[in-house]
Length: 251
Ligand code: ADP
Ligand code: MG
Ligand code: MG
Image (cartoon, rainbow, N blue to C red; front, side, top):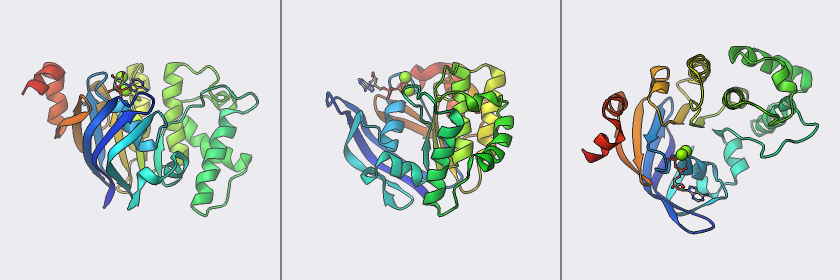
């Protein structure tokens, strides 16, 4: 079943009207893992932000249908409640609001949407604790202030924890592998694999091939200058590993 259908999307930076996305099309079915690779600056993060409705960008053409609905007409929060996940980071520390409070609130919002009863703090703790364990995160992590001085690796684990807690039909993961050592990478990859079912899908963005040693993609897309210039299977990543992006785009 088709989950996300992107047709010929173009997008500009809202402030300067500079065009960044120059016509992207992509279809994601349930159970698929799509990977977007590409050089720095090719527009990967912009594409993921446009999908979640980031206010820095304006869509100037094309269409996006998510679970049969016009995604572009939805507010960012509605997109997330509809089952589209992208990690969120509070831009500032919020005094007195712990990471656990923050996750609990976000999770309850999603449960309301699904007509499920909200979880109180104790029930939520019982729900989240096993997930914390899986990610090898310490309990005190939940008691810290939102955004309270996480290291790069902790932030990545926190993104995956958010995903594990909230659940999603389509998770967009932008460079979850950047700055992780191999152990941390494996933990994060194991967590992502654990979340994959025949029903839900992942759109992963990565600059490097090594994440693909642990998470098996259905399709790999290569982006260049705001467009997808190549789509294929894992052999694309292998070619990139051998020859680099230049060899691929010159082909
Ligand atoms: P990638 O994630 O592939 O490295 P990005 O999507 O972050 O690429 O950026 C694509 C291009 O658009 C880059 O040249 C970047 O500098 C530019 N860009 C993206 N967002 C902004 C912004 N908000 N303001 C100015 N330039 C931007
Ligand atoms: Mg970049
Ligand atoms: Mg990026």
